[in-house]
Image 1: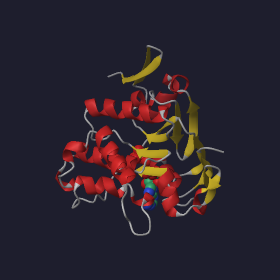
Image 2: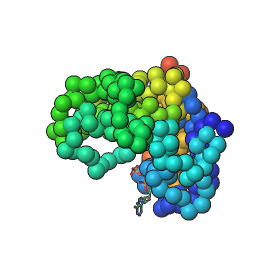
Image 3: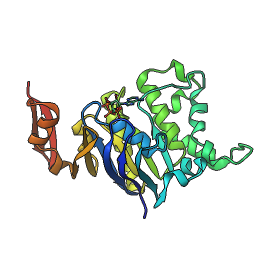
Image 4: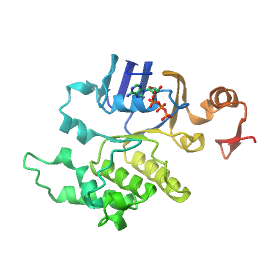
Length: 250
Ligand SMILES: Nc1ncnc2c1ncn2[C@@H]1O[C@H](COP(=O)(O)OP(=O)(O)OP(=O)(O)O)[C@@H](O)[C@H]1O
C-alpha cells in the first residue's frame, strides 16, 4: 500500500508502541512536549534507528529490506541539528542530496543539475550557492539543508522542526512550500512545536510519553482540554476562519 507507515514501534528510548502513517499527497504534523519521542520516531521512520519491536513499511515493504540508495530516492530527512558539512560550498551541500540517484561512477546528469537548481530556487537558497555552509546564519543554513533534502526529489519528506531558526517571512514561505509539494503528491511528516503552524497540516498526531495521545484534523484535535493537558492551564484556543488559533493567556 502506498505510504510510509510505522506499526507498533517500541523503542529505542522513549517510544512505547506507536502507529503512524503518512500517505502520498498528505501533510502530517507531529507534536508533543519535549522528550515525548518525536525526533526518535522520525529517525526510526527514516531508517536511521531500529526499533526494539514493530516495523516501518515504505510502499508496503519493510524499510530494512531496501537498499540504502533506493530508500534515499524515496525518502529524505531533515534533522533537527548537526553535524553540518560546514566546509562545503552551499551548491556542493545541495548536490549531496542527489547521491542516491547517481550511478556507480557518481556521474551527474541533466536531471541532477535541474533538481539541484529547483531545490535552491524553491528554498530561496540560490543566492548563497557560492558561500561556505559554515559562513551562513542559522536560518540561511536551515534553508540550504532543506534544499539538500528536496534535491533528492523524494516521495516522502521527514522534517524535524524545519521552521526553527527561520524568521516569520521564511516560516510562512516554508509552510506554503510544504503545501505546494503536498499538492504535487509528496507525503510530508513534520515535527512542529507551534500548534498554529501544525494547524496548516492535513492531519496532526500528538505524542505524549512515547505514546500516541491524539490524532485527526487540527480543528478536532486542538481543543483547550487537550492542549492544556499537554502544555499547562494558560493555553487558549480561538477559532478564526475555520482554523484553530492557539495562544498563551498571560
Ligand atoms: N541517544 C539517546 N540515548 C538515550 N536517550 C535518548 C537518546 N535519544 C533520545 N533519548 C531520550 O528519548 C526521549 C525522547 O527523545 P526525543 O528526542 O525523541 O524527544 P522529542 O519529542 O523529539 O523532544 P524535543 O521536543 O525536546 O525535541 C528523551 O527522554 C531523550 O532523552
